[in-house]
Amino acid sequence: MNNINKKPISSLGYGFIPKEFIPKGKNEYHLVIFRTGAALNTVNLSAHETEVLVRNGNSSDNWDKVLVSDAFNPALVKNCKFYGLVRIGKLEPYFVEFNNLRNADGFIQQHHHQL
Image 1 (tube, one colour):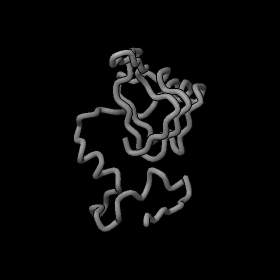
Image 2 (cartoon, one colour; image 1 turned 135 degrees about the vertical axis):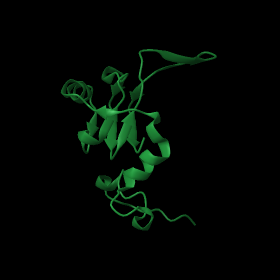
Image 3 (spheres, one colour; image 1 turned 60 degrees about the horizontal axis):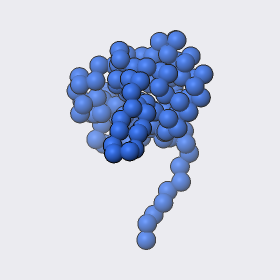
């Protein structure tokens, strides 16, 4: 039988690595960034980017933990929720196609944590 734990939404995106595996003086994000290296160069959101994200129905428990690349387009993110450290790379106004299935590039109605 499966054991399902119910936890507060405020803990989503946090406490995902047991403390005994986190090096002294570091936090859980250190291991995520170490694992991916400098492959994704990110910076904090600008005030304009945050404004566009909020206007498009997005929310975050902490906008300072939403990091983006220089090729980030906030107009392509709609109705999403971000928890903890989230890093978003290049988003462009394109769609992808497979046979007759077409899907817009971007994030639409999604929940993200530790990207």
